[in-house]
Amino acid sequence: MQQAPQPQLDGLDNLADAQDRWTGHVTLVTGASSGIGAAICRELVKQGMTVVGCARNDERIKEMAAELQGCAGSLTAMRCDLSQLDQVDAMFRTIEQQFGGEDVLINNADLNFGRWLLDGSAEKWRAMLDVNVLALAHCAQLAVNNMAACEVSEAQVINICSRAGHCVDDWPDLHFCTATKYAVTALTESLRQEVAAKKMRIRVAQISPGLVNTDIANRMLADKQEA
Image (cartoon, rainbow, N blue to C red; front, side, top):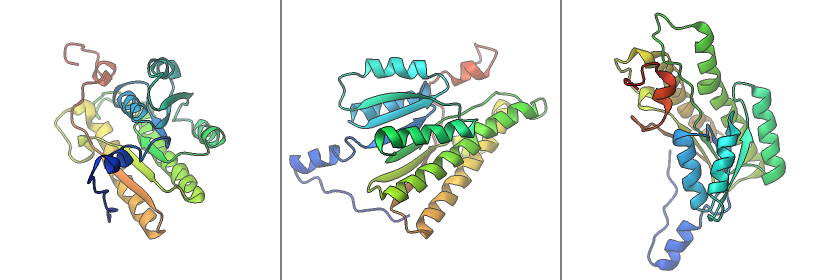
């Protein structure tokens, strides 16, 4: 994708302009109650953005919002079960009503039950697909269409994927989750192609971290020493 020219930071005035570029812009972060999602929310609020964090456990986001009072930006908690697409639709309508829509979408929500393919359950696989793939695609679809309709000038969709979206490691507890992450990689490139074909001024990106110090291993593995 062709990149827009980067601002030349010739002096303090230009530096201040660059730092203020995203001030007040509205960002939706999914899976915002813990881990990478919570860290993203904290940093964006400190940088002056208007952040909407969604998760099934919105109480943790409300606690984080209270901690961030006095920062340059703000954090609003919204309860949403991303596996229920009607709740996703309602959340986007609420964001439009309260904030006029979103400028940035960060698809971060992730679900993994940590079982081998040979002893996993189709029910758990379906739940992972609902959150990791279908909800991500649906959120991206809603956000891009909203951004295009509102002619947002600084629009971005960022999918938080994983190293597992690019290679299959010898860790059977991650194997089905790895399949969903490969789907995220394909969806990101597909969305980028469609946005380019329609000549939308929307950036599409993917970030694929390796191992990160979060509580996901404790949720995934029964053996806490292994986690």
